Image 1 (cartoon, rainbow, N blue to C red):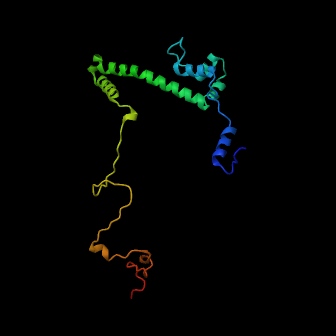
Image 2 (tube, rainbow, N blue to C red; image 1 turned 45 degrees about the vertical axis):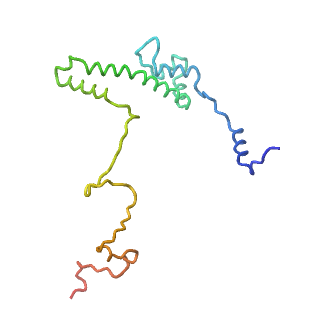
Image 3 (cartoon, rainbow, N blue to C red; image 1 turned 180 degrees about the horizontal axis):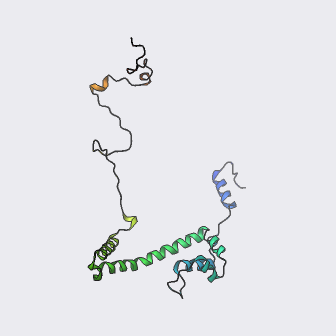
Length: 188
């Protein structure tokens, strides 16, 4: 006899898992869609250097452009596209570094200020650290005291004579009549 769901929460969870539809592991990532994504990211293998749009990729694999656009909205296809693009970006980094090093070392650019500026920019690019390795610390300072501002509450427990005569609480507001010293009413 099966366990009652109202008495055993684990049995209820197990029953829900059995009834839930199982997602397909590559829902939407058909071989033709995969090929279209590869064309868009890496280009056509027989025509290097040519940029392939989604409409051109759809035509190359025998699909309508709308089918490729709709497939790119599906999570598995979008994930495959992003992984492919990230691998292309990583593969192109060494070539970019070589180009920047070539510009930095080019003797023909030493003749004028614009060339020297270009070399400086290339050198800065080569010195740049990857984003995920940087550490940033922000600290805010009070301009009056020069002390760092730390978030939170400060409770002052000092006992000085100037503060001993100050009354605190709600009675301070409604303690008595308000006297306006700038008013001329009632003055004879």
